[in-house]
Image (cartoon, rainbow, N blue to C red; front, side, top):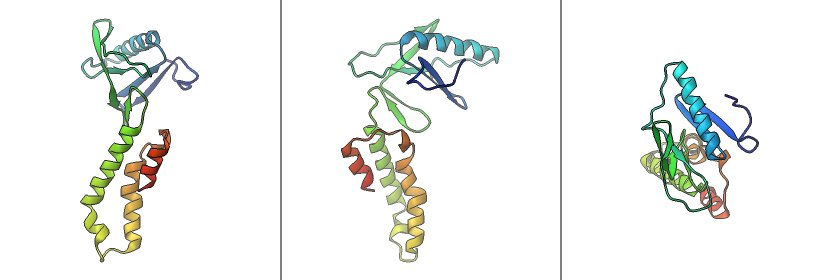
Length: 159
């Protein structure tokens, strides 16, 4: 399976991390072909694709109804969004939901460690280290893939 390039210049792409595999294609036919090839290569190593955990996401600006995709005897469920290695990917490619989740999670962590930030026994330098090493990374995790609108920029910069 050819793995080089990116989806902007190729018809299909395969991304793998441990036992999580993401197949990205522009159309349905390359998805079917790539998935079939993945199953064949996996079988050579005595690995099987779990049909219950395998889902597919269709990204488009058009409205459509959810439908199952059949490949051989396996039926793949279509979803509106999924979590892959942390960030949530959804069918309209918007990042607002993910950013709201990160801001909410940041607030939970801050309030859980609020006693440290309000304590007079902890120096300002230590509080800044806590902020930059714990609080800030929660919000900015995977931020290099975000495409931000002005309203979201204001929310993120408010931290």
